Every structure is written in structure tokens, then in C-alpha cells.
Image 1: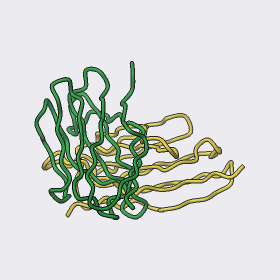
Image 2: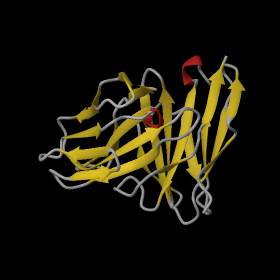
Image 3: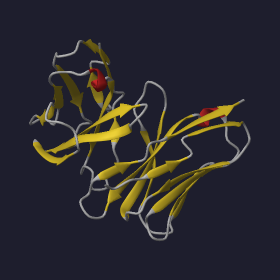
Length: 114
Length: 111
């Protein structure tokens, strides 16, 4: 069974630009959640999508948005990039989502904003 | 704000020693998960504990969920260099099914 795939692995953008990250979940998993990981703040929850609907949302500004397609693939978009957005962005898929079923993480997209 | 405090933040010990990592909160969790993350990779689930007082063992790793379901510990016996990594705990809240993450414990085992 293929794991969670995130693309691209690395990305360099400049301030003010926007970026789209992609996540393909494990086949059969309907939940995809996104996280920002930085050395200072640890792992922070961005949002969760389940069957194309946003089910949970963390405390991030509206510049961070996402969506999920009918095949469960998900994208995350960050507009008007700031230096502080530099981080490892992880997505995770699961059968039932954050209500207890295990999360399977991808290897992340390393975003650097200059 | 619901917090999950993880300690220590950093631990560097010699191969063969024992260690314990703690996750504490004032909130009650319906379940708590432990993950290990290696450089360049995403976290990998080690175990999920659900019942207060539950103890689970994974080879040399012992996980315990507090009786009140507010805290958990991970004990490693006779640590090996392969145990090196970032250990993360994450609790599912009783109230709104949010997943709250600890800040992580960076563990280095020196040969």
C-alpha cells in the first residue's frame, strides 16, 4: 500500500508570493490534516478535511487555506508569504480523522521564504 | 487554551541507559498517541493509549496513560542509537476532538 505522498519536497519562495502544496493520502483514507512544524513552535495543527469538507481548523490566519478533492487528495495554499511561514509542512491521512484513528504522515514539504 | 506539556525538551544519554519522557496536561483526553520522527521524515505512530491506567509495551518502550487521562509517559529501557529521534505526544480532547500536540522531546543516544 503506498504511503502518504507530499509534493514538492522542497520549495523556495519570496515574500509576498503564494504557494500551493499537494498531499495524496493512503488509498481509502478520507481524512487529510495539515500541520506546520518549526523548531520553535513544534507541530501546529492547520486544518482537517474529511470527504471534501473542512471539519476542524487551527488558529492560523486566513492566508492559509486548503481544499480536498473527490479522490481525497488535498491541497494547501498560503498567500502573501511572510518570512515566518518558513517551516516543514506535513500532511497526514487517516481512516476516520482526528477522532482517534491513527495518523499516517507524509515526509513533508520544506518551505523556505526569503 | 489546551496545552500538552512535554518534558524534557532535549535528552542526550549513553547507549544502555534508561530514560522517561513525560506529557502532562490539565485537560482530559479520550486517547493519547506517541509518535517518533526522524530527520527528513514525517512522524510515525508508535502507540495509542485509550484507557486510564493503561500500559502498553513495544519491545524496550513502555507507554503509560495516567489514571485520570491527563498525562502519559514513555519509558525506554537500555536505549540504543536507533532510538534517536524526536518523540511527540498528541492527545485527542474529550470535548471537541481536537488533536493537541506536545512540543516534542529530541532524544540522542550516543554509542
